[in-house]
Image: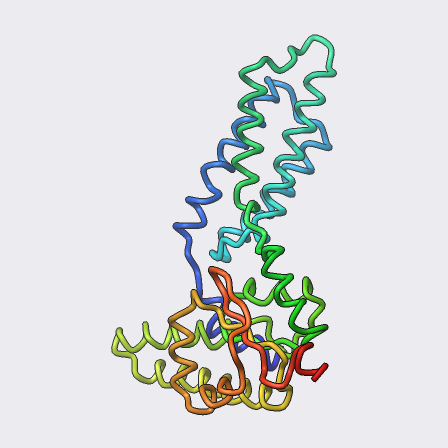
Length: 269
C-alpha cells in the first residue's frame, strides 16, 4: 500500500477506455440479459439462476468501472451470465407445461455463447515452432523484457521453462507514465509532466540496475510497443547493455535476443 499503490494511482488506475469496453462487451451482455429474461417466460427465476445473474452483474460493474477491457476482467461477468442462461434453459426444458427451446431459440443461444466467447479467443500462447527455436538455443534461461505488454513475456517464459528476473510483469509503469506525461505536456501542465517524467526516470534507473545484476540469458523486446521502446533505447545505458545480445528469434509481436556467451552451443564449446 505504501510503495505500490501511489504508482498505480498515478498510472494504471488513470488508464480508462470506456468506449472500447462498452463496444466489446456491452452489446453482447445486454442481449444475454434480454435472452435470460425471455427464457423466464413470465415465471420467477429460480434461486440458482438469480444468484448466478446477480454475481454476473456484480462482475460487470467493475469491468466497466476499471475501463481496461482485458478479457480476464470480463470473465466473471460473462461466465456467470452464460451459466445463468444455461441453468434457466435447462429448468425451462425440464419443467412441465413450459415449451422447450425451438430451433431458432437454440440458434440464438449458440450465437450468444459464441459472441461472449470471442474476447477469450486470443490466448497469447506462442507458436510451437517459435518456442522450439528458443528451447533449442538455451535450457531454462533467465529472461528479461523491454516492453509494456504483460503478454510479451507471459506465458512465453513458462512455456520455455524460463525464470523471470524482474519484479514487474512488464514495463507497464514506465510506459503509462510516459503516456500521461505526454498528455500533461500537451495540456500545458509542465509540473505534472515533470513529476511523471521522474517516475519514468526512476523506473528505468532501477530497471537497468536489475538487468545488469541479473544478466538474463534472453531479452525480449516487444516490437509492437514502438512508443516505449524508442524512449528506453534513447538512454545510452540501455543501448550499451543490449550490445551484449544478438537476435535469436522473433515473431510478429516480439524479438528475442540471446546474450553472447549463453546458449547450448556456447556451453558445449
